[in-house]
Every structure is written in structure tokens, then in C-alpha cells.
Length: 128
Image (tube, rainbow, N blue to C red; front, side, top):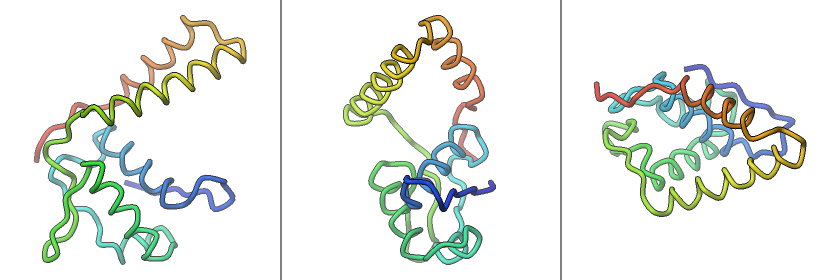
């Protein structure tokens, strides 16, 4: 998986990293149970501070996307489930995206088609 960061973006680097890893899992670029690079390796590859990667991994772990082991490192969780907190977050973000689409003149059909097209690029999660 190639990590692309926008150093000029208002979005913090750790959030960009988090989002790219989640997208990588969703697209099937990262498989369930797959070992992730060490904090130091990812920091070197991405050209960022290791504390930034560490913060990203802590967030991903708290959200249930990855598991960590002090001796073996970080792995994509092999059982990522939707919980009530995730569902609330998803609904809130979809509400905002829907409002933005509506306000800018996008019709419902076009919005739903875009959602379908993007979702169809995601791969079902399969354990290694």
C-alpha cells in the first residue's frame, strides 16, 4: 500500500495516515490479520515523525481496526465489527456529505450513484 500525504492540507498528518490505512483495509489492499509496518518503518516511508505514526496506530487500535503486540508489532484486526459508536459516526458523516451535496445542487440520484460507485470498489474483508 502506498501512503500519500498532503503536507499542505489542513487535515493533520495522523488523520491522513489513519484514513489511508482504513481505506487500504476497505479496498482489500491490506488483508485481515496482515502485519503492518513498524512505527519506525512507516515513519521513514511516509517521511514523518515516528510519534505521528504512533498516534495513528493508537487511534486505529482504539477504533478496532488494528491490534498491537509489543513483541510482534501491529496487525490488521481479523474481526472488525460495526458498533453503536461507529454507526453514529457514519450517520453523522453521511448527513454532512448529503447536506453538502444537496446545497451544491447535486441531486439524490447522482449522490447515491456516487456512493454506490465508491462502495463497489471496496473488497469484502477476508482473513489471511
